[in-house]
Structure formats: C-alpha cells, structure tokens
Length: 477
Image (tube, rainbow, N blue to C red; front, side, top):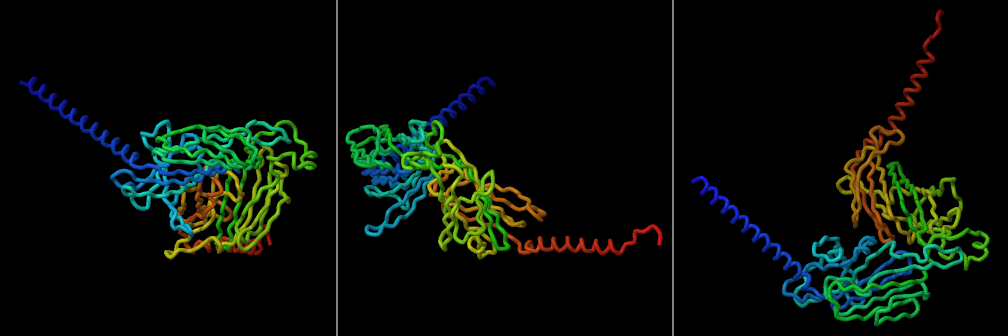
C-alpha cells in the first residue's frame, strides 16, 4: 500500500514539474517574441552621420529619422555600438529638435543597457522618448557621441621632421538593430592629405571631406568595415591622471591644487632631438609636438602658481577677466610622441562666487567638473572636495555617472578631521566641463573652534610664563 502511494506521489510531482517547465518555456518564448517584435516595429527612414576627425578626440553627430511601423506604441529607441566603440565611448547625448527656423533641442535620457540577444557583443544605449511613438508616426533624433583613443598612429614611430599619420577604423554602414532605408556617412579630416581609404561604392573624396553613400535598404546589424589613413599633426594631449583638490574655507577663499601627469599620445619620437633644428625651422620640425597648453580657469583667480618636480616655472601667461581667466602653460621642454611631463597648478578663487546657501540652511558648492586644459583627454580624473571641519551629510549631484566615496583629512588645528568627498571618473573629455554641486550641512559654532583653540593656547602660554616668573626655585632664602 505504501509503495503504491509513493509511486502516485512521485507521478504527481513529475507532472507538476512538467507543467512548470512548460509554463517557463512559454513565458521565455513570449518574452523573446515581444522583444524581437518591439525591435522590428521600428525602422529608420534616414540616417545622416558626420564624423569629425580634426582632433585626436573623435566626435560623431548622428541624425536619425525613426518611424514606428508596428501596431503598439514605442517609448524607447536603441542605439547600438560595436564592442570596440563601447570601450572608447566617453559621452553619449541625444535630443529632439523643436521648431523650424530657430531650433531648440529637448534632451533625452540616454542610459546603457544589457540585452542578451545582442549579436557579436554589441552594446546598447536606450534613448527614452518624451512621449510614446504611435503607429505610423515619425520622429527625428539627433545624437552626439564622443570617442577617445580611436586614432591609431601609423607608423608608430616618426622622426622629428616627419608628419604624423593615423588610422581610423569604422563601418560605412551605421550599426543599428533596425532596418535603415537610406543613410550617408561623412568623415572630415584635418587636412586634404589622405594617404588611403577603403573604397565602397558609392564613395567620394573632395578636400577634407570623405563621403560614403548613400546606401539604401540595409538590414539590421549590417556592418561594412572601412579604414582611413590620413595626416593629423594635432598634438595628442592625454592626461593619464589628474588629481584636483578643492579645499573650502568659510573664512573667504577656496584653494584649488591640480596635479597633472601629461602624455603625448601620438606617434613616438624616433631618433634624437635637435633643439637647433626645432627652433630654426619650426614649420618643418616637430609638427605634431606641442610647446604650450591653454587652460581656462574661473574668473577672478588669485595666487596662481605653476611648478614641477624641479621647482617653480615662470614660463606661463595669465590673463584675468570678468568671465574667465586664460592661462598659457609652457613646459620646460616641447613634448613629442611618447614623452611625459608632470606638474602642479594651484590658485585661489573667491568663496562667494562658488559657495551658496540653500533654503533649508544647508550649503552647496557649485563648481565645474572636468579638466581646465582645452582639447585634452583625461584617462582618470579624481576630484577631492575638502569640506570645513564639522561638515556632515556630504553628497554630490552630477548630470552624468561618477563614483563617489568619503574620506578624512587632518590639517592644521583640526580635531575631528575634515570630510573629503572623492569623485572619480574615467575617460573625461572637454564636454564633461559642466557644473556639479556638492551639498553638505555645517554648524556655525564650528567657525569658533579654531579661534578659541588659538586663544586657549596663547592664554595657557602666558599663564605658564607668569607662573614661572613668580615661582621661587632657590634652595634657601
């Protein structure tokens, strides 16, 4: 009897397990069908891509005219990148143009996403629409993304008198999970000296512009690799690491100290360096090197200094205005490909220009993120915001993603230590130079801590001196 019951129990368990597996398979198939249908519901009527190669930072402007050919409304559009492009991406933006004569742009939320159905390691970014796109409707989306370290020097080593040639690799067809009716790709080079380029009809080259297309009726995930070999003598200024310390003092000033590790990321220097040829024939020697760097500092800066490991460097120029301060930095030696330089820049700014008080009584710092030098890539940027002693509840607000953590720092006359908010971000470009806010709470009583400490020390010192003068240390009278 017990054996029969056990057999019936096992059969019922197996039947239930089979039902669960069948239900799971139905759900997975339904999910895949819905995912594929949502992807195939959209099609791109026109795709115009402009690739700016005039600098060592590659900037791409892509205009998409998207149509919903399905029955269900769609609230998001996918932007696809190859694995190599995804590693080199520094910034992705999207906006919808509004108006005809005077265009205004309504920005869209763009966030990376992982899709298991992405072929060949394709990476996706989701562009969230302001309102769902109904059946038969079209929308124009203008995207702008920036890539770093996308230009490959070839040859990898050049002499002092040679020009710098680089490779750029991409696809003539826009990588997209949607079918594309018509598309055109334009590449702009810094000069009309193009050594070679992949020919894929129709292709045309005129001056500094290289055109691929128009191409029509391309299937999703179409990819046609191209390679362009051209001259680019712009200096490849790469800051391997930038550590910036922003120290706030409620007594009237903010002190900024920036530590730079600079690298020329272009073709490496081959052979010796002749300063005589470099100075006598500047038009033919060291075309891809750079002698100076241009930094845009905040207005009304003061106490500016510039030094390296040897000491203070006086070869710099500073021009202060009400809107910005221009600083031209001249290193001790010109930088060629593969050469490095480390230096420190420090300056102070008025407290009232950057520190404000909220309605709830908290305080916040409004400062510019990113690097002050123009047209540079920062591989690793660390911002350390040193708050006054006694500050609590520190947090930062960004318009992009960045790592945040808290540390402690002890300075002169500190007792409990100062809160340091550390902000870290990699692959920083000039487009990241936008304001960010650091909010914190501060009790006004801590303003009296250091003065009272100094008064107490001096008072104790004078009392000790008075007591010492009035004490008789003689053995006998």
